Image 1 (spheres, rainbow, N blue to C red):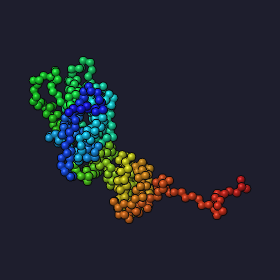
Image 2: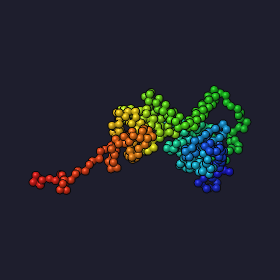
Image 3: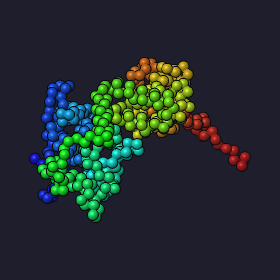
Image 4: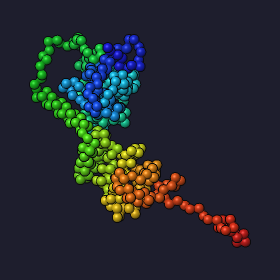
Length: 405
């Protein structure tokens, strides 16, 4: 059964259709998973790779995803009913398919991995706008850009104008519209296409080279997917080696964005501050933190969870590796992170009030917290000002002699 791509549009003559999502739950216990039975057909109707909506489901549900393009199997771990996934698909369509100017689904994604940007171009109204890069799926799209066969890419310079109506670009647009209108199925070739065309593979040097590039891209996508199936420890090891190589080559300061994207791709962004402490800080932490403030801030700003992992790394640094030299400087170190907008005061105060043996022994954890001077009214690391004591007769000590005026 075909449904409207924009399910909020109740116009009976709305022509953009897609198949209703079909889901099948397989397996038991920890091996339970949901197979999106008709994901290729849905993706074709949306002119997006089937990996995109599948990965979007994983991002929204916090679940692992699996792609097997050869056998057309697109899987989300866990048990999920079709209606729930259909509702999530509405969100994907709104964010990554619908034109935000005319609400038309005839759009293409223009991906620039070098610039780290994703634009959406509407071939109906000509509008080009940026995709919201805050969603986790954008990291996956940057690493796995759509090819022309998937979305029949039409760049802004290929928009239909005047006498170009019968150009190859215009035909591609018409074909894409026909795909959506028929729910992803094209019953007949375009009118001006010769039905007797040779359907064999082109064997020119350029065609062979293009197919090899496409094959390399597919292999790269498979490797990226395999990474996400690894354990947290293995994924952290990948990030560790990546940051270490950038540090050793002196390129880390120029590769902050690259490191951030890699951590987001591997879904370990919150834990990376512990790796940064291990690789970038020593007993010279007060000077080193100024040198590396940008990368620390990139991971920790407005992210309390990442800040807690940073404090865990600092506990090991100050209480174990360099305890002799750094234990007396605990308050100064935390204040340095606070002044550079890496640690929030609320996170530091919460840490100081809860003793944990997660990273160091409970005794050492208590010693670290005892070194921190904090108050609910004074800023972190500042000594509270004691009120002046009144004199014995109850008057303040700053009484003055009227005759001295």
